[in-house]
Image (cartoon, rainbow, N blue to C red; front, side, top):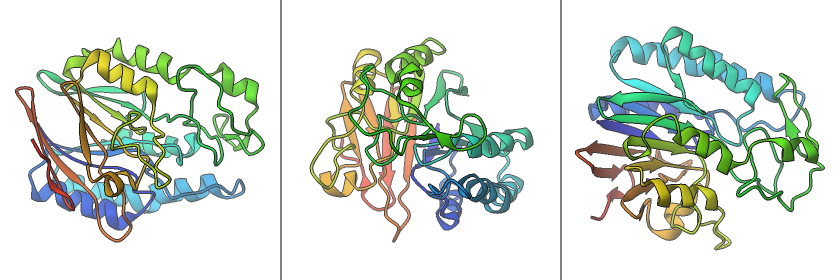
Length: 283
C-alpha cells in the first residue's frame, strides 16, 4: 500500500494540485489529507460561505479532473480545528460523486489486511475553541470561552462551557473508534499529533499534542499514525517522523513556500517513508 500524505493545506489549491501530481507521479494507491482542508475563516458573517465555496468552486472540479485521469487512486479527507463542521458537510457531499472519502470518525478498508480510520479533534487551543476541539483526558481547558464558537446547528453561534463539557472527550472518541477495526491493522489519521514528540513542538518550545492519543498509540501499537496541526514542528525538531513503540508517527509540517508531502509504503508490517523536503526517514 502506497500513500501520498500531507496535512494543513488550508484551502491552498496549488498545494492540492501538487499533492495530486505527487500521488500520480509516484503511483500511490491513496491520497490522504490529515486535517485543516479549507481556507482559514473565523469571521462569523462569511466563514461558512467562504469554506463551502472553496469546496464547490475549487476542490470539487480538481478532484473530478483527477478522478477522470486516475480513477483507482482513492482520496481521503480529514477536517481539522480550522474547518467548520457545517462547511465540512460540503466535503462529505463529495462522497456522493465518488470524489473523496470523508475521514472524521469513519473507517475504510485499504487492503485485505489494512484499514484506515480518521479523527479530527484536537485538544482545545487558546485562540478560539471551535467544532473540532475536545477535552484531552476529560479535563476542561483553562482557556476563556468568550470567543468559543460552534457550527453544529448549521450556523455559527457562541459555544457555552457547559455545552463543551458535555461533548465526548478525545479519550472516549478514540476508544469507540478502536472498537470498529483491529488497531494493529489500522492506519489512524488524527489531526493532533501525540504529546511530547518531535511532531508536536511549537516555536515557544512547548509540546501541545494529545496525551490521550499518545497513550492510545502506546496501548494499541497501530502500524502507522498520520498527523498535522503543528506546522512548524518538523522544522524545529529536525524530524517529521518518530516511533512510539513499534508505531511510526508522521507530521509532514507546513510551509507556504513549498509543498510538504510524504510518500509512505506500508507492507508486511514495515513502513518506508520519503518527504518532499526532508528526504528519506532514518531507519
